[in-house]
Image 1: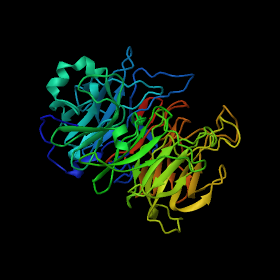
Image 2: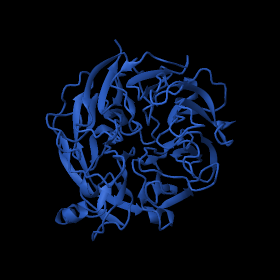
Image 3: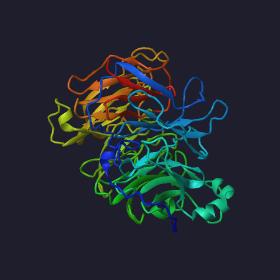
Image 4: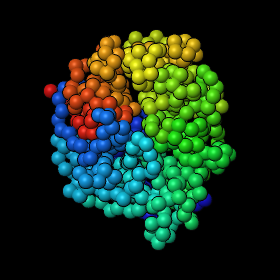
Length: 502
């Protein structure tokens, strides 16, 4: 179903005008920096990403959006809540070099959260090389603000399923029906993609949730999860699952489910028509039962340089692998199931050039980095030895928890801080869902629930000295980012920190 909406064209494909465009840095979610990162030794500036954080027994189960950063070092931050209302979102812009205000008036949005357990992300993206920023709005609409590097910029609103006139005439009904439930992804041509959920019937709105597209010319379209898969039990795109785009721009990948923790599919859709090119039911590699796709997680597809696709799921039965899940691995056409990784569910794989890990002697051109927790919460075999891992997607080892062949560990690093809840040898979890990769310095930026941020050096397989950011906090996982000046960004305890060398 199509709806044509007039809006000024995005016009430019100048990728040099943007730096960190959205979740995972780019439309493939590779999480790769383009400059050498600074060693995180001091906090240059910080700002809250939540003015009313809601703690649950001391834990913070809220998914915070990745900051987006232009090539001119304007950092645009999603800020949740006010001191009196936790469900308001606005977008504030600061100058990366000192944290001073770049926009005198934040970009406000009427975005409404979908029904949820853990708070899902409200995720923006830069568009057309950074000429605009797109942010979620109420009723499944998207707001576009021009000139992200300037104090002012024109703002337009676009619904994907009807005209703007019809949306405004039926605003109350549409706002109660249609909810954006993922970060927005922009492709190289300025087309936007995002998942949506339907919570109430509304005349003129989609009947069920699915994937939306707004073209660079402002034409909206969508496909429901049921239509994309041919399975009427599919309800929506998995919460927080930012769509990923193939390297040639022709395919969009997204996961859909039958509800929170339900089964589902990874689908490959034509990036122009949203027609289904391929689909695969997501299965537990050990049991062959339907894997569990959790709306509480933050797994998104990652597309490798060879076109392979990676996506994290939970195990079934749960928690037979102590809540580790799997990093499923497919060919780009989804026809071939390849070797899985041994951790997956609340994590997005980062792409590491093989040359960035000097000890690697294999034949793969790239490796994948993932969180590699082994939670103590569920008891043996969970031992609390929570790690980060760089894995070889084309080599195998036997997974000690299941006996399944999984991606071979190239290097791993153990969390450095004892977890007082369980005592030694258990350590605090790594608090990262998409870890920034610096191929120049051969390292990754990793954030920990111990309240510190670290650089993981792939050459020495060591962590830099801890840079304290906040008190230790159990929390939903957060992204790390590298700015165009090499500054490191990490969110801990609802605060974004800009970290630089001394």
